[in-house]
Image 1 (tube, helix red, strand yellow):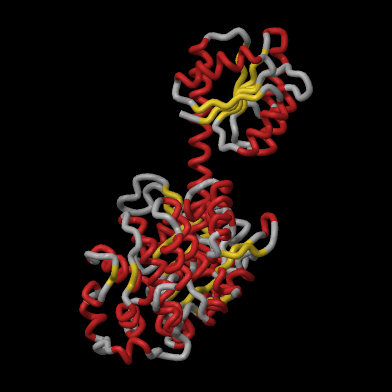
Image 2 (cartoon, rainbow, N blue to C red):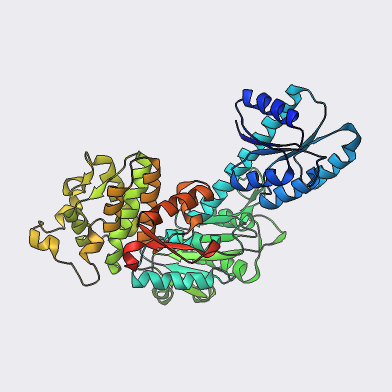
Amino acid sequence: MGNVLIIDDEKNYLIILEDLLAEEGHHVMTAESGREGLELVQNNDLDVVITDMKMPGMDGMQVLEQVLALDADLPVIMMTAFGTVEKAVEAMKKGAFHYILKPFENEELKVLVQKAVEHHQIKRQNRQMKDILAEQHQFHNIVGKSEPMQRVYALIRKVAPTKATVLITGESGTGKELIARAIHFNSPRKTGPFISVNCGALPENLLESELFGHERGAFTGAVGLRKGRFELAHGGTLFLDEISEMSPPLQVKLLRALQEMRFERVGGTETLHVDVRVVAASNRNLKEEVAAGRFRSDLFFRLNVVHVQLPSLRERPSDIPLLAQHFLRKYEKQTGREGLRFRPETLRALLDYSWPGNVRELENVVERAVILCPDEEITLEDLPAEILSSTPSPSPASISSPVEPSVRMDDVREPSDRREALKILPPGPQRVRQLRALDFVQSQGYITNRDYARLNEVSERQALRELTDMVDKGLLVRMGKGRSCQYVSAQETS
């Protein structure tokens, strides 16, 4: 069922249609003029607008244009008399969902409204999924405030809008594909495909077919034509993970494809041209691989236009508390648990560990702790044995003293603004959303109205109300005006 607005200057029609559609389970609003109807469109989340064609003042065509200017996806059904069918057809050309002739059968209107509601809800869900996908790979979803990560952010902000080939290096588990996706979704190619290939997961003959495709009969088992990843990535980004695992013969073919953006399928003679941006990644030092003769120098220089070196987790220990809190909220949401927190000695153990598996290992540890934790506090008992075996036994002195100058105990303990929020925010779904927003501010420094809406999957109007509530309660401070407005921690500004 949906939210329906009916606009008609005839009160009797409004009463009849409101009762008819309310019986079907729809929430119905009415307006006696186009201007009154537009105010309701601006201030409510609607699924369909039904407007009469002929009205004094603002007629149905003007209403249609104004509604579509406010929300191009909102279906508008035109009600028209027999003599104005031509106008209704014109309205369809301008974007109306459908029209219906007065007088009409009740069932006809019911079916048409239900189709319009379902159409809008499907479009909204698709848009939300696209927004969520893009949002997941914005820079502010790469958690970290440390100086090494700030340098990474600055670099990828500069390179993302360009066509330059990017080489990402770093240890396993540092988030190379996450960076590659962030580059893609912040580039002009974001509406195109993002295609990923793990070059170390396939043998040479299969990898060549995977990259360039093959013709029918090219080899045993090639029963039909298959497009390769280069073709599938046309207009988008191709991510070549573990590029150092590629064999020398295949490196030659890849170099030609990168230089000319032309190639032939395996077993084919037709030369294909594509428009692809390549982002490559390796957990090895490619300069050393070149010196050892295992990687072509010309391919290295072709890939290494812009080099992004990701720091290991042990190189940015001040980010460990932020990452741990980020993953805690993520799995808290997935498991339906609320109010989980780390004991100080638990976070201290995470800080003392060397993290050979980097961010990926930390995420796995936090997920495990959320699953095993019987209470609201995550203790040392909820951590794996390998972390405890590398951690000195905690004592009051060791808990209160920092491991290194870059890590303060304010980072280790639960943020004080979150503790204050738990005291003053009433329990319920809104508090969960607002706490999630505070975690976002803690990791990114600020939050916008759009960030809040996407983070919590609510409308921007609802996001504005809940952010304003946090400002009124002294948890956040509003900075700026309009769409550029940002909300920051009240404690940071005090």
